[in-house]
Image 1 (tube, rainbow, N blue to C red):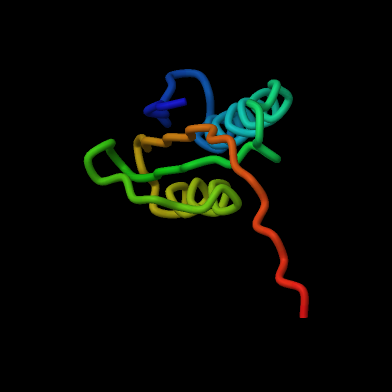
Image 2: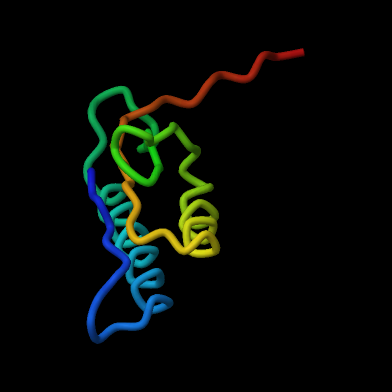
Length: 97
């Protein structure tokens, strides 16, 4: 998912657009996690970028998506760019002590 979320609409309030954006991202991640994993992978990880535009986007952790959207809300951004790319990953083995 590479998307520029526009936070202005003639009939919808700003807060509602923020909640719609958060919900859309949540639904996308949920759908991607339900897809079949490739051979040798343990789970789906996500490479994420967030910023006002695609050029200004910086890498963020998947768990910080809602925090960053809320930060954009508090700064009254008119739009923001979010990139969420699913990546198959494997768990690191614990060392036996």
